[in-house]
Image: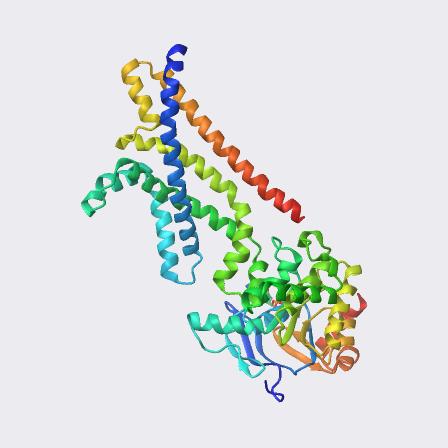
Length: 220
Length: 254
Ligand SMILES: Nc1ncnc2c1ncn2[C@@H]1O[C@H](COP(=O)(O)OP(=O)(O)OP(=O)(O)O)[C@@H](O)[C@H]1O
Ligand SMILES: [Mg+2]
């Protein structure tokens, strides 16, 4: 094992991981937005909206992320959607993780006691207000964990964007391999960088959970 | 609105779950300022009937009237939503399981309806909430979260929350059934106070003694029909129908 090499490439890999982090963050923002809309769609009183939302989730979960990425990056220009690799990556991953996250949101909303909806409706609140004022705030505490798990999956799947030329962690590693011929050392460093990123996400999730727990303890 | 019109009137209400008909043509009148109680065995359709009145359950047929307005008007979509949200503001409902909002304080639970739906200012809503809390004997609990309260206290807050909308009628669905026996009385006291204030009330209960004490009229339901109804003392001590006798024998002996 060439520890010296590992030490040498570390600063460069650290820099590349910044790109991985920003891919994750941008995709997460889009993903949460998409997830919210899709989850709402699945509870809509309008049947076609429910169908569209359900179909969206099925398609995004039923096809490989890599295929989705290629459709948007290579297929997009055919329809006037000519994106830079970074943007194509962020858009694809956001749309993809949004579908998964919407399932977690839906599950947490279903988990809120039905009596809450009845109390709200019996006071005269409409469907939307009921969701916004009573159901969603209670579901939020329940959905943190599943959103966290999906964010970890998202961070790791940013590696796929290396295939369309974004020089994030995995692509940087591949470049170092061609110049050093030491794939084990190089990818070990890359792997360690992913672990640091994932660790940071898990710590954030735990922090948020504590925050909600503290609220609940104050409430209890 | 109209002194002659009853506060609540149900005409031939029917309701099915699939092929199972749980309400088989119910007629019911709650006159203004009167207390009507519904008793009957488990599964007889009492909750379903009560929940049909504010359309938490959809009925298959029949008419529902509140103070001269038809509740189940044949409207669709947004128009219906607007109509029913308005109607529901005029009927307070109290549930067996309290259903307080756990993420809000007691005061917020009571204030949110008047503020968001009736356009009260925060100050006005807080004043109203505090007055109601004092009335149900919980003046010092405004800042507490529901999880901190006993069952009896929760139910009293739930009653205050419903009253804060200044409803024309209060619907109670076994308000004391989920309570430990020693907590029943404090909720009954609050309900009796409403009786003395001439609030119109429709009460589903399994407490025969309480029903006899407060009601102007009692209905006995079984199998989705009203088997017998009348003066509470007559129904509870000297029923005509055999089914009522059987039910009461079981219940009064417990
Ligand atoms: N959502 C539902 N789906 C199918 N059947 C239902 C549903 N809700 C109630 N029922 C049935 O309707 C009938 C009447 O139920 P309801 O809850 O109105 O009875 P109840 O008189 O309030 O009983 P209890 O004293 O136990 O509260 C029962 O047979 C019940 O099984
Ligand atoms: Mg019931």
